[in-house]
Amino acid sequence: MHQALSVSAVTTYLRELLESHPLLGDLWVQGEIAEFKRHAASGHCYFSLKDEGGLVRAVMWRSNAVRLSQLPRTGDLVLAHGYLSLYAPRGELQLYTDTLLPAGVGLLYARFEALRARLEAEGLFAVERKRPLPRLPRRIGLVTAPGGAALQDMLTILARRCPLSEVLVAPCLVQGERAPASIVAALTTVYAAGVDLVILARGGGSLEDLWAFNDEAVARAVFASPVPLITGVGHETDTTMVDYVADLRAPTPSVAAELAVPEHDDLLALVWQSRMRLDQGVDALLNRTQADLANARSTIERHTPLRRLARDRQQVDDLGRRLDRAVDRTTAMCQLALQGLVARLATLSPQATLQRGYAVVRHATTGHVLGSVTGVQSGTPLQIDLRDGTLAAVTVPLAEEEESE
Image (cartoon, rainbow, N blue to C red; front, top):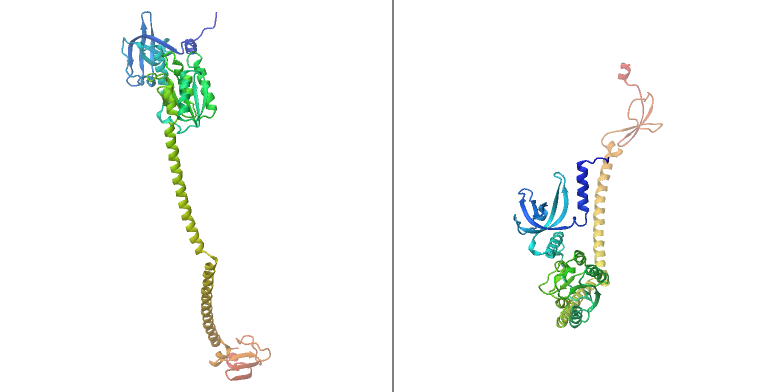
């Protein structure tokens, strides 16, 4: 007996098997809408698709449902695109839908609309990313079928309108199963050739003939163009996926060539305008240069060596006079200060002190000035300096000191 599997393991296995199946993972289903409901809070849509032989549950999440121009009603016959999976909680098949179209539009148109909605959501059609065409492209890349009338018409128009532009032709298949890969390869070639502008074109045809230009890989290759790209696919009433992605759509290949380069007369007018702008620029440059030269001459005259020497000499004279005045002021101030110091010294000199009635007592032997009786013994010879002379004396004991002893 084989090992038993859990219900979760079985549902997980079936879900992975369904989602990895090449057909069931990218599926178009036609059927009649039954029990269509849109959840008010989440915005998700839940419905069933049925025919006389069966029924399948379906869901469309809000992110896809917002792109519906009109909600389908119960009983409508529709084409639904999505993938089949298993809803584990109820163990039932469910179609996870990303596109829902009326069944009458046909499968090719349904595929076109589904891809267009997805690429638009990714930003491949955004207006702000579309680039202006170069005014005078030096090198133009043509991606189209070799030997066709469209190629010859474009080459004739480009040579007549702007013979200065170099044209690089990258031939490719423009219809059939191998056409998408061929177009992508040709675009890659011209991108690597360093062109300034690319034209992707083919003549008219049926929807099936033009279907290669609705291929997702081709649309993404157009989006990847490093330079502005013009499409001219089919006739004016034909619109393909690459037209939405291109920087500019032309209704026909001939118009694409006319839009790519200026007319000969327009080119001459452009050259004349450029010459006028150049002349104006040269005149403006000469005027600015003459003004700069006049300013420089005036500056040089104001800064000649003789003028600078005269200014320097004047400055030296001024500094000399200022120095003399400073020396005089400093000398006078020093003299006044010196006189004050002399007067103070005279006042404090010993002779002046004697003049005020004081005396200077010295030891007659040593000449030392005696400032105190301490240490002076009786019989010490003294020299007394007075205002008008000197006296000799000898110390004797004082009567008061003897009595105190």
